[in-house]
Length: 30
Image (cartoon, rainbow, N blue to C red; front, side, top):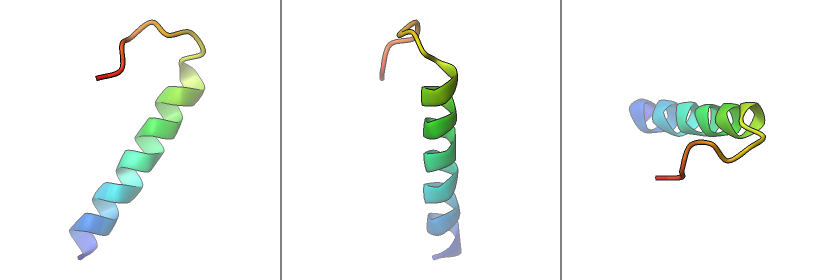
């Protein structure tokens, strides 16, 4: 349960960071 919550939080943070840092679509969305 803790691992799942940690994974979800990390995913959200990473996605938000990438979306904020990359204004232009340089890297394609996998």
